[in-house]
Amino acid sequence: MSSDDNDTRMIKRIRDAAQTHIVVAALLVTVTFAAGFTLPGGFESDKDSLDKGMAILTKKSAFCAFVVTDAIAFVCSAGAVFSYFVMAAAHGPTIKEELRVLLNIFVVATILQFLSMSAVVIAFVTGQMKSELARQQRLDSFDGRKRKVEVIDSYIRR
Image (tube, rainbow, N blue to C red; front, side, top):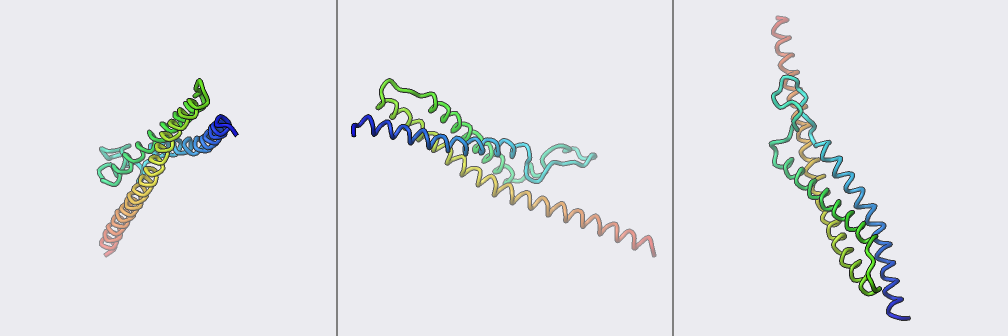
């Protein structure tokens, strides 16, 4: 077997792996984009609030961590998708040159994808923690209002 045959096989393997990776990267772009609009904890909906329409957890540090890691995940996965598209169009003048270019782009795209996956995990964890805390705070405030109404009702009935 010649060196060119081995290089051609290697190019095919890299391109096959890139096809699988681009699907994952595209899913990550989609998920992180959607997470940017559906923020954990929800939005302030009280019509009398000055913060109506703002994220409930804006002032919480874990929420800030969520927003930053979600943005990092989005940018990295979008960069990976772009890199895979460049790989699809990359053709060198020789097989050796093409292999070198594809390998370099593949390494960059893979690193971006791993960074994106790591950031998604962190964003999910921080988002879940804070949305659970916000839900608990809403339940506590609802229970507090309910107790106040019960106390007022019992006072009125006397």
